[in-house]
Length: 183
Ligand SMILES: O=C(O)C[C@@H](Cc1ccccc1)[C@H](O)SCc1ccccc1
Ligand code: NI
Image 1 (tube, helix red, strand yellow):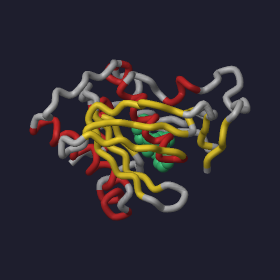
Image 2 (cartoon, helix red, strand yellow):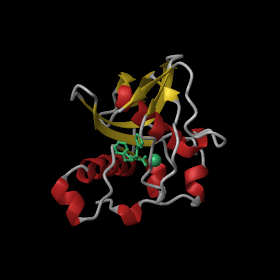
Image 3 (cartoon, protein in one colour):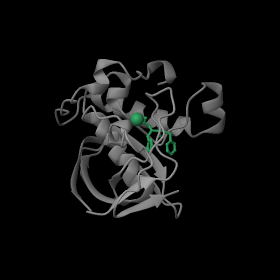
């Protein structure tokens, strides 16, 4: 199982690489990696397992964060109505997005960043994501709220982008035009 020692931290070059597309149909090795990403996210939200293995709680994880520079992400998160969005995807892609923006009022963090980086992270308020699931099927998901933010955070990792790259350095809490605050 993946634990915190397997998660690489900022400064590691893999976090700044453009991850490679996964060759489909996925190999057993790539399927196992993606299953492990999802297992970590679910474990990190389990009070007993996260305490036992000292896991930082997360709602998503991308393969580059375990030093696998391939386009795979796992997201396991509930929206404001308690609806669960649980997806493990190969080659995820944002195929459309709103003009309207959103941001987490509390700012963002990252399992690969062991420090607080205050500031608003502007994201698309709504996104449509396509990807390939572990059964090899194409999925198309329309997202808003925290799930939309989580998917954008994870897909950024596949493109070598860290959440703080989006923060206005001069005014981190600058009001974001045409944006919804979440949380
Ligand atoms: O480092 C990661 O990719 C996992 C992040 C993903 C994330 C960060 C900020 C906003 C959305 C997703 C971890 O989940 S950070 C912990 C966390 C937990 C609940 C809500 C937000 C962030
Ligand atoms: Ni992150």
